[in-house]
Image (tube, rainbow, N blue to C red):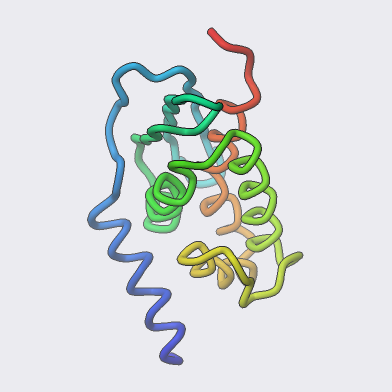
Amino acid sequence: MSDLGELYQSVILDHNRHPRNCGPLAGADREAEGYNPLCGDRLKVWVRFGEGDVIEAVNFEGTGCAISQASASLMTTAIRGRTRGEALELFDRFHRLVAGEEPSQPAGLGKLAVFAGVRAYPSRVKCASLAWHALRSALVSPSS
């Protein structure tokens, strides 16, 4: 395995073993659930907005494989402090990355680039993007 591959594996394993922003979010403005029937991964995402439509906090909770859990954890750290529009743009870039439509060494995605490798395993793309689809649903759904 290359040094880069080992680094990517290390980041994914760390976020799976020690997920960030895991657990229900008090005072959430939005929430959405995601389910992957192919493997049984299931999670829920909560989002709370601050002033100017900025994402003040985002949490997740669920069960699933290391890739889905690490992706959810990294997603929460990547979108905190961004506006709703910026988070939706990041969703699009991430989805293109894992689908193989974005370069495997993309600029501006930071640690999210660790998921470039899942494009080689089509069944894992859904694992990596599950939390992101739940986030997108939470961001575009009408306020409750």
